[in-house]
Length: 361
Image 1 (spheres, one colour):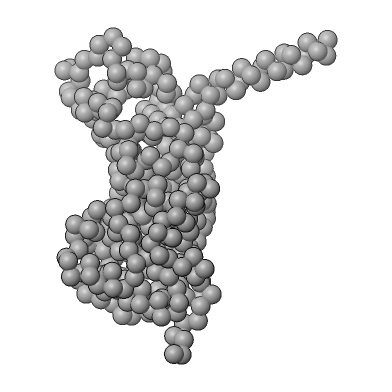
Image 2: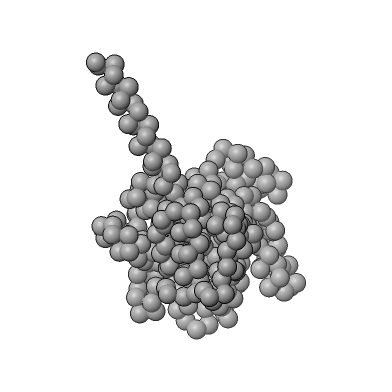
């Protein structure tokens, strides 16, 4: 009799686990790197509160490719191959054939969260129709940002909207404090060490990575500020590395690139997986309101984020060791700010175990 009960309990547990794994969610996230990283707390909410077997992300491959095995995201798919543009047509003109790729795309999901379309839009109606061709599915449409008059962190806003529409307790909407969102693997660190050795960085010294760019020019602190920080750090025997992406390489004038290379070593045009490796070796990171800043913070790197026109209460990076400075002046990107440079150094240097005074020659 006891053996029969044990077998029955095992079968029930196996069945419950299979049912859980069958319940999956997908998030349609068309945003850039920062948007994708700020969606991770929502992924965590879906997995924990709804006890789902997995959550997948559909987005731009260059941004989401690093997430599986390093985050709570289980799988990814490129938004460029998903034919989602078809869902924007009017419902009376929308047509699905048998074995349509769109039906197959959503067939495995009981929950679909989309940042594409708007509530009540043609896109949402077509998405609901498509999803329910395979199974009963809950579809929730979210805006990419909260209302302009609502100073709530965007990650908490996402979680709150889903909690309300999914009948979850609102206390679950609070974003976890000081949580690491991106877990670094040993292969990442090995890749980072290799990159730094190739660049000539002295690995026995402290390393500060500076990323002076952002997706929007108005969000970029004047380059002279970053050059000033680099010189002050190097005067204290700190290794400094400028990280330049495609936007910075295109935006910076030749004379500015000369100044950057003169202030510190540089790396440019890295794949995002290489950036993860590089940041995993850094003692600190300094950057604007950018995707790379969100990445550094989410990895647990000591991060200093410089905000200008954007509101840090809404968009501050999430991570265990983040310091935010804001200069809302209209000339944030147009001229240097020696005062803010001193404030940044005043926080950064002690965090690295360094004195605020320059060493005597």
